[in-house]
Length: 38
Image (cartoon, rainbow, N blue to C red; front, side, top):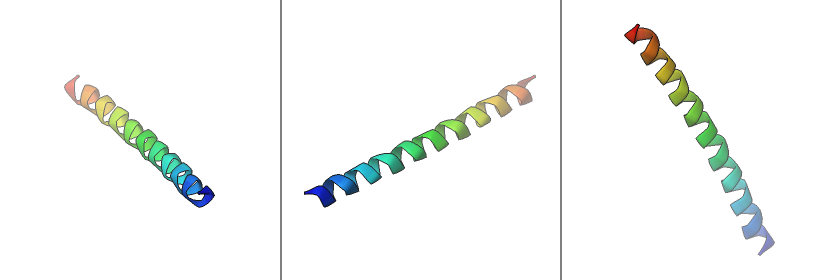
């Protein structure tokens, strides 16, 4: 059971890191769109 709990915790951490990276990329894209629009 502890192995499963550990695996789930690692998956959760990986997902959180991926979401943070996606959010950062989307923010960069939005900034670029605004710069192009000016």
